[in-house]
Structure formats: C-alpha cells, structure tokens
Image 1 (cartoon, helix red, strand yellow):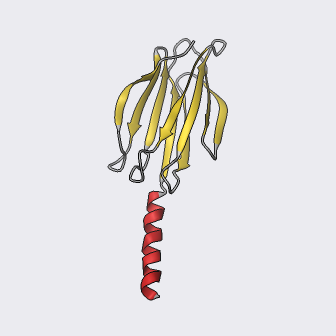
Image 2 (image 1 turned 90 degrees about the horizontal axis):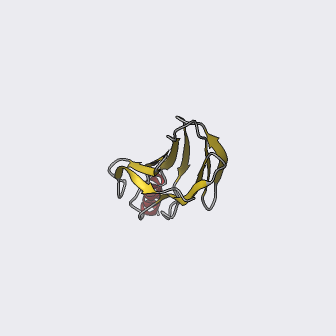
Image 3 (image 1 turned 90 degrees about the vertical axis):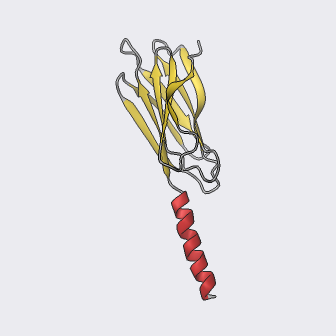
Length: 136
C-alpha cells in the first residue's frame, strides 16, 4: 500500500506539471487609428467582446486541460464599420507532450500574423508570419 501511495504522489506531481499555463496575445497594429474588436472562446471560457485601441494588446491566460484538447477560437473585426473580419483557431495543442506556449497574434492592414513562443515543450513553434487575410 505504501508503494501505491508513493506512486500516486509522483503521478500527481507529473500531472500538475502538465496542466500548465498558456496564453494568447492579440495586438492591434492597424493603421489610421482603427479599433480592433475581439471575442475569443473555448469550451469552458469566453473572453470579450473587447475593443483594442491601436498600438495596444490584450493577453488571455488560461490553463490547458489534462487531455490536451484545449482550443480557443477568436473573431477579429476592424473599423470602420467592422466590415473586415476573420474567424480562426487562435490556440490549440498538438498532443499531450505540447505545453501550448504563447500564441502572439498581430492584426495588421494586410492580414493577421502569428508568432508562437515557448520553451522546449512547445510543438510546432513558428516565427512571425502571415496566417490569415481579412474577409470582406
């Protein structure tokens, strides 16, 4: 019984290490003082709607779940009239060994860019590059 208790203790420490924090950053790098409207959601959480002024950003922090199925979807809309928009997967894991990291999104005039930051446990890291065009 003592060995089983030690096993459970070590196992729970390993699991707590896996259920780590991750996040999304969304920055407004639009021109002409355009506001950026955002709304993000997962199965369990909703962030927004929120309006971000030019040159500012918001950080959305959360814990990934034990089953490595955490996923956030976001909708971005830009002024004027919020005519240009994009809906996309802003965060997802690539298996139980992926710890998520920070998914840094930048809204620019020609589209939406991504830089995925993180340490050695981040799968599929990417440097800043354009991911999506705006939809009219």
